[in-house]
Every structure is written in C-alpha cells, then in structure tokens.
Length: 455
Image 1 (tube, one colour):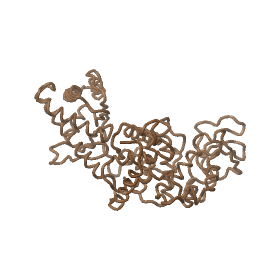
Image 2 (cartoon, rainbow, N blue to C red):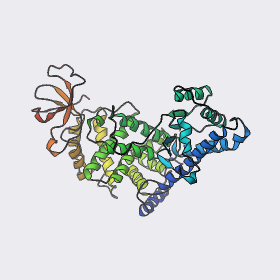
Image 3 (cartoon, rainbow, N blue to C red):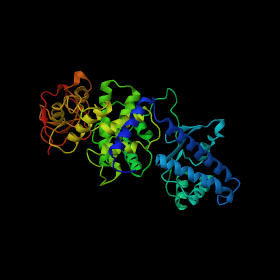
Image 4 (cartoon, one colour):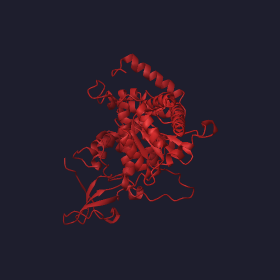
C-alpha cells in the first residue's frame, strides 16, 4: 500500500466511506468474526484429531503429514488476521481470541479438546507465531503423552522447551462464574490498565507488521473499563510502565469515556468510542520517516490501515471517521463527527497536561476554554470539565494546614465539583506523607491553593 494518497485516492476513499455509512449495521464486524470463527473451528478440529491419532501412531508417522500441513496453514491465516492466536477452553466451550466457536453436533465433538488440554492442567494455548511441521509434531507428541503426576502444566512447558517448540504459551485453566456467585475481590484493580497497555501495544505491532486490524481485544478492554467505576481513583493514578504511545492512547480513551458518560451515550456507542480512542493515532504505525507521518498526515495514514479490515459496518465506520477527524477543528467544514470532536478535545487535554508542561490540569482547561466554539466543540468541552471537576486528577494543591496533595480522581458529582478526593504528598512540615495514608476528602480541607508543576 502506498504511503501517499493522491487527490483521486482521497476522493474514492471518501465516497466509499459515504456509501458505508448508508449501509452500516449495528455491532462489530460480522465478516471478521465469522472468518475467525471458521478458522478457529478448523484449528480446534485439527488439534483434537491429531491428539486422537497419537493413540495409534507416533507423530512422525506419515499419517500426520496432511493434517499437520493443514494446521500450519490455518495458523498462518489466523496469524495474518489476529497476530497472536489465543485458543481457550472453558468447560465445554472453545474460544479463539474472544470469539466462541461451535461445539455442538455439527462441530464433531470439538468440546473434547478442553478435556485433552485439562489433563495437563492447561486451559488454553497461545500461538505467538505459526508453527512449522516439526514444532507441530513435537507439540502434539507432548500433549498426547501422559501428564506428569505433579505440576503437569509446568512439566509440559519444560517438555516443549526441550523439544525446541518456540512461540507457544500455555494458559491456566478457566471456569465460568456461577449465577449469584460474588466476584472475588480484585487485589490490584489497576491490572486492567496494564492489560490495556499490552493490548494497545499489540494492536499497533500488528498494524506495523501489515496484519488486518483486529479490534476485538481492544473492545474487550473497553468493556471491562465500562464495567468498572470510571471515577475509581485506582484508574487515575500514574499509568504502569509501557510504550509512551500506548500510555497516551489509554489516557485518551479514559478521558473520552468520561465525556461519553456525561453525554449519555449508549453502552454500544461507548464501546465504539473507547476502541476508536485506542486506535486514533494508529497512522504512526506506518513506519518512521514515511511522508504521511506528520500531525496533518497521520490521520489519513491511520484510516488506510483501518481500511484493511474487511467489510463495512457501523463500528468500523465510526473508527475510520474518528481517525480521520481527530485533529480537525470543530468549526471546520465539513464538521467532524461526534467521535472526532471528542477526541480533538481529550487528546489536546492529555498532550497539554501529561507531557511535562508548566501548567496544571486546571489551567490547561482554562486555556482550552479560550478556543471553545472554534477549535473545540463548546458543549463537549464543558462536559469534560463537568466530569473532571474544578481540580482534575493530577492537580497539585496546598491545603490550609500547609500540606500538599495531588487530586486522585474525577469529581464525584455537582456537589463535590470543587472538593475532590486527593492523596497527601507532603505533610505540613514538608516531610513525605506515609505511602499507605488513605485518600482524603477535600470538602472540609479549608482554603485550597493551586500549585503549578515544574516545567
């Protein structure tokens, strides 16, 4: 695919997008899901068939030649679409990258594959790359052997390592949560942020490698974020370590979901918004030094990357338009869509408040208000302010008693607009505050003095 777009190319792309909007349908890409389901069913069927054959033949028998070759080809196709291929067995159901595949009569007993894996205390296999013939035979041989009496999954991993089988990761066993069963207390609620960074990084690596976009893992992350309280302080501290671009995209997604919540968007639209935010700068994945990589050109480059995904539907169209329009001013004609206007605001806010500038988050919002109605949609900008509060997360304040705090979460509502939750950094004598000190409610903290971060 050429990195440059001539005017005729742009015109054709815009016409195609226009037609796509007219025939858009609600939901994720059905064509992609059906293709993954078809290939996933074939993968599970071949794995189960090969394991059954080990009861009669050694994996080096010529009877394995054809099914091993078919398994290799299937992994190649899945890898081209998905990148890493995750096959998971949960009780009597099989999933491939979050898509459940058929396990009924027409699937010829694929559910038995779960039992074959569970003999080794394994709940799933992750293929980080397509396996070649020798590696497939070694994998099947190790899975077909009797499991070790103690720590069978560890023993299987060692056997695969000894057989030089690279690129396969063994997953632990899974189960469904029963109806009425209370959720276990999550010991680290920030774990979703770690996985969001990893999923975003993987999505960009796949695009850079020329693979078809697979929004399903990102959609799962967004769904999990929506299931949590977006005002939870655990979601608003400093992000875990990760690639800078991934950290930026997760912060932008977090802010975009706040605006979407304030705007009263439906759950499905919120999911599309979150995925669009995690993809919005994907044009930078086209490679260093490409002509299109500029503040003006990378939105178009990103749209070209997303166009690799087959078919057109509402979710894909929203992502494409958001990627094309996230740097377009609100008052420019043709006016950007809702997602583009939201991303324009939250990305600029993140850029100004999170990259070592000399202005506090509160002052950043004050500066942005000067461009309300021109660069920024005035209503959406006000919704962001309403959601973050008078002192957004990260704001440094000095309390009346002389101690210094950092705001830890968005506002909890109109009544607490100017009284957020905060974490104390320094005591009144200037000494560090205890790290395990609970958050404090600034409602009764007296006069608050805004502090500017160091440049």
